[in-house]
Length: 409
Ligand code: CTP
Image (cartoon, rainbow, N blue to C red):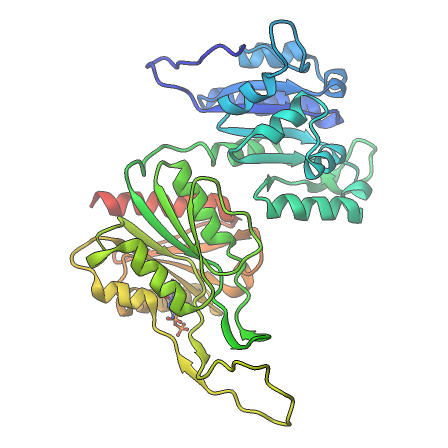
């Protein structure tokens, strides 16, 4: 049985299951544990059997003040320890994560306590892979990594550097500070409790005929990261999403749409009369500006040159800016441009005014598309904040930090 946790002020501490697998980098897990404990996190260490050969369990027990668990069938448990650990955890991290761990997570293996805990966990999962560069670059590992990312697992590293064998390449575990920061990024305050936040994400798809459409390269990752972070911070979240290849974050109300018109209807429904049904709308969707003037019912035949007539779609965000009374809902737009620096700021400012929104998240196409990280600027009426390159998940929290201040005004 896990004992319950109450921090010094009677508040529950954020809780992380820290899984450790059998890589030489396991000794660095102790440093990560120390950083988390210092940040006020309760750390529940779970080691695989091979990890215990690399790092003494007593070290982790000493740092965390918790018993180190490895055995599903430890005395006093009824084979349900993995379920208890998963339920207690706000997040499960695996530091280091071997190639084998990645593979078994993809397969849904529950062959030991750590794997069974990962399979039971419903919160965020952060992995810090560490392996020889040849293992990391093997197509099997690349496929596993792609699958895990698609399922919403966050991978920190590996980085390029020297690995245990003395070889140099991509495979070395990320530094403990970076791993701890990624974990802490998921454990922020519940400062959106009681708020309803509507997030749009992904592209819209505008049909030409039953087989063809117009769309864009938006992956939806930024909007999904914002939705996930808002849930974690206590908001009720409606996620209006165009077609994407992502798992919806747990806890969101997902509304799937295809075209800009469907997105418009879904937003109207989520916001209700006079847009009073939500505290904030975050328009991360890449809404198609144009759609074909006619959607053909039968597939178009090849007949030589054709001209596709396009008509403008409504600007959903600008419509919300015009329709709202007073300062609610807070409106956040995105500006995706192909310019940088001052030109990016002035494009964002123009959008802020033209669409009558409160905050514009400005980014440049080359930094943003189909990637897990991005570089953004936050532009509101008073100031511009340029943020360093970071994962979309970390940036989602910075956007929400700003939203929280706007909600307080
Ligand atoms: N947006 C929208 N409806 C549209 C187009 C865009 O609601 N038809 C929203 C996007 O979700 C985003 C913001 O407006 O939050 C900026 O979109 P962007 O395409 O960068 O700006 P545009 O208004 O299309 O301006 P331009 O293409 O001229 O840069």
